[in-house]
Image (cartoon, rainbow, N blue to C red; front, side, top):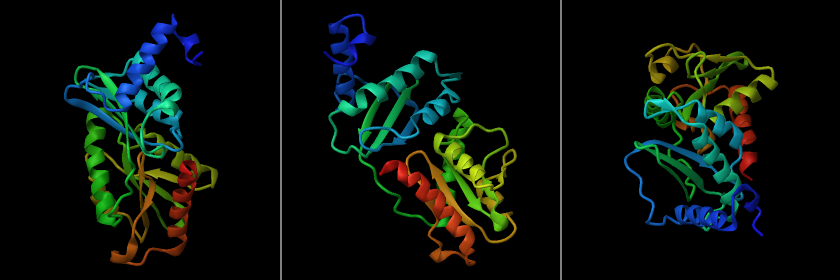
Length: 247
């Protein structure tokens, strides 16, 4: 007996659901999406998704096709991960789970390999954060955002006050708070990430917060000014904290 059967009206209905999920994860050709309206990429570990509840909460705060996602869609996403991901037929159990919702409101999930960021320079991280701001303008939540540790231990988050954050960013803010660090949201209105970073007084350790990559600390070898050792250590501590979830 499948452990999923209690959730369905019959054995046949349960089997149909399991086949549907397997076909999606294997890239079966019978399910086709229209143009994507939202793509979420969540890092996996051992056929599971760490921070799943945070990801689902952030998903519920997104606007897709002009409206919030329905309760049924959110339930489908959570149940699909909890019930089917562990049994999926895919090569990389520590890959990336991609959730795609199209312009018609249809959705599917698929699993692909994880590839670390090749360019960890400050300019590259800022560029990714700028691109994510464009998604935030359309959906209400950025999948990646820039942050920095400033002199005195302040953690600068390049998002607007009151803005909904992606799952990984909510965890970083919580980790900072538990360490007694002051977290400051530094974006206002249409200010660009690069401009807001340039306006910060004093040298900082910059890092990217990402649902796919966790925390990525800048490679400071090409930095115009030395990055303070203490600030860099705090940034790496955030990276190590999230990395533990994927081991």
